[in-house]
Length: 411
Image (cartoon, rainbow, N blue to C red; front, side, top):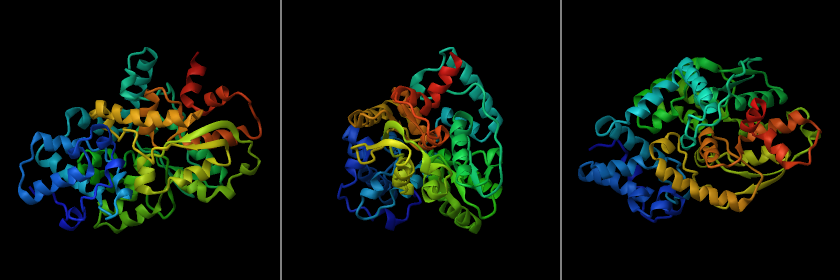
């Protein structure tokens, strides 16, 4: 079977195995077929040796989290993300289509009104304790704040899941951008979904359609600021996803993560020099698509350094938390085992709160009882507090975590 993989890319792997310790599925299973090296060998067998695609081979590809932690560990520069992406696209179209559950969920993402309606119903169901915590759904607000644009210096891309489930993060991002002197255009329903999860699922044609729509919906040359690491990574790759569209490459160059953008404009943030840091210790959980794909994870540290008492690093060298977009839903047991490694690292850090710049990571960790929020929430909270100060870490945690804010308001 032709997996549509360039032979040069496939043969770049020299079988050294330096990727193994960076692969979350190999770390928890010890199974060679669930490692980058093993999966590449299976790709070679299928494409070069006409190996039939068995259910075991499909499983090996399906259980890849697509964290791409193997890429920075690879001395040969194997473009593993491209390899697994092409493989899953071919498998999804010719061998094993994504599950009906996943296809239904992905279809809802591109229908903003439907997604918001489902989210409202889910929010009420949560209050009645009808939503199992194992699903990883964050505590949803019963009412969402209205979106408002204040200008067009930058575009704030709001997307699908975050806009329906975690709009408070967009609010914090917008306030922070405006404090830095930027008038913000909120993308809203103009560009409801970037297609990242569709691409991960192997639905290449649908991902291309959604990417084209986003590119066409957000013209001009101003920066496009994204506060979801997964969305940002996908949008920065629009140039390669749409190789025949020059506007896509220009669009991709405009995309910037919120941490990255504000870290470059800290000097312009009004009131930052007078901020009294939050008296909490913060452990940084680097989202894989911020660290391994975009390579801008240091910006989170630059952003938070002035506004919190202490930053603590996890000792797992950026190992994936097991969220992986829809991975935690489609591969729940494997996802939990991977998360257990991350939880051990978080416990060793012994911080008051964890930050992660990706909504999937935050939800996955919160399901396990971790106090977690987006870095921009702490940044915004510190600036909103001004010079006021509280000595109680618990109170600051309540303020830093919107889930706790919501609970306090409802009681």
